[in-house]
Length: 202
Figure 1: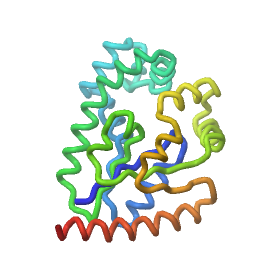
Figure 2: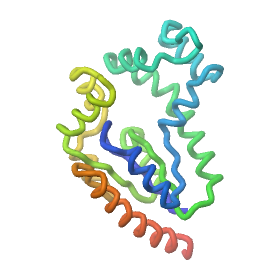
Figure 3: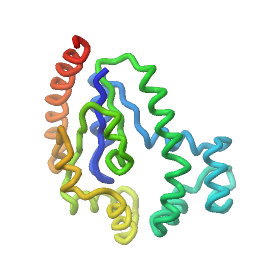
Figure 4: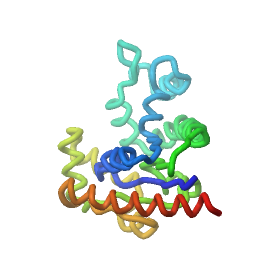
């Protein structure tokens, strides 16, 4: 099966693109969704996070206080590495399990830290959703209410926009309106269907 790695900076519009590709028949596996599943009450990863970062990160209903955890790990690089050590292997294992069970024209793996975690080696093509950094920061601020300092730390934890674009096989420009983005998605979907047929025929 043809496997596409979908990535982009925070606030670039990865979920919008993933949903649009899914609506056209692609099988989408979103690692952010898997991360949330793995940190539900009763999951081993949640217990490890509490042991590593403190039980105060677990709310009264037994759920992870994601805002508090994010504030902690993005203000402390060592804490972020510790959290990634807990979550990333589990996320990768579950993602590959689901990928192996798929039956679809092609698969899209939504991986925000695709290059940073060297998971670009798992895919046939890399699709980057791109917007100017000023627009990216404004979207994140409006959506999440994070401070400029918090946004800066998150952006700094990802590879640069220039490097991401240089390493992409396909690029979607999300600086305009939604119809313009969806027109690009439609074109790419057709391209991926053709590539998937070629892969199947090999």
